[in-house]
Image (cartoon, rainbow, N blue to C red; front, side, top):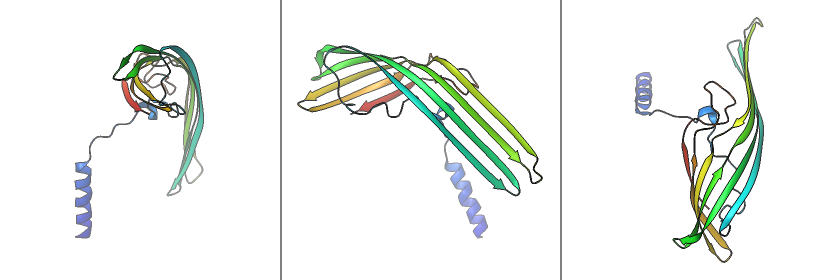
Length: 188
């Protein structure tokens, strides 16, 4: 009876789950760490320009041994993005704060290498490697922000919209664009 009850509970669990969705390429379009010091500060009215540069390198490797078989795999990735941004803070107050519009371009390079091998008990090995490298334009990001100042205190609310017109190709490991719209709300 315990085995039947376990199977019934497992069947109910599987039947109650919903579809899961993952970010394409295992990453989202929001660049973690891009909002740091003074993230709640909006400059005075005017037009501003900046360029942020972002570099990432990382790797992961794993080995799994089951019944005399060894499955080994790993991935190495490097990326560099330049993010030129234009910001326009309007003169007219809105809701007691200042309203700003921004546009960020993305120019980037990405290099991804992945491999896997399966080794049998006799030492015979099957392996595969894939890689992709590209330098291209990514999706532009448009933004709108409303910011307030009170003495030494500053706070903002805003939204960012990813516009899917950057380089993207089905099956390419090193796509710079995301091939889908994205919206992000921020508050600081």
